[in-house]
Image (spheres, rainbow, N blue to C red):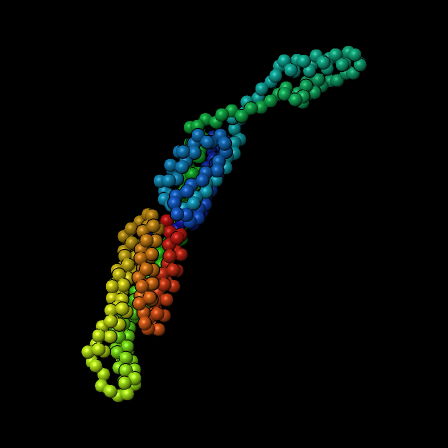
Length: 293
């Protein structure tokens, strides 16, 4: 299916007293640019996460946010500094003896002193972390791709409608072309008759002028190529899947070039207006294609 480059997906998973929430957001971009924002202890998994994403995401600027929460006691180590606690106890006993102060809760006091009891984070088990993260990541990717495909189908329908309008405008230019030559011939004869004051006009000279005009204003090749490009647009959408954005972008550049040539060769107001409409529709498609993967 055709995919847009804008999308959002979210996935969650909880196991082994650990929870992951993964969010994926993307916007259009010329290349495949993936940024991963995760807790620092997961840096060793970044390459694995990136490869998993790159298998499904082919183009766009993608931001991946990974949030982690742990309710496990396995990842925390409690340490007691026995020597420091002993020293505090000795000093408290000394103060009692010197100043006659007594307390029933020496242990509570010592426990509150700095560095007596400390906690350290234990390095997470890599296999367990990936086991919990992977389902959340895959769910986020699935939801993300699904949204991209829905957006892509909407873009596809709109682009094909504009592509049909381009074919109609090209057909109108094709029909108008012979009429322009006849109108030019008639105007030329009338103008020469006025200038020469009813003196007979040299038919051979008129024929030469008509040939020159026809050659300069002929857009038959451009029309043929425009029809061909419009058909290729339909074929790409009908037959191809995955990343078609670059191919479509090149094709639209070619269509724009043909429309420019038609406009520059035109010596007729109606053809010029139709060429402008052609360029307008092509530009609309070009803007939409910037958002196709």
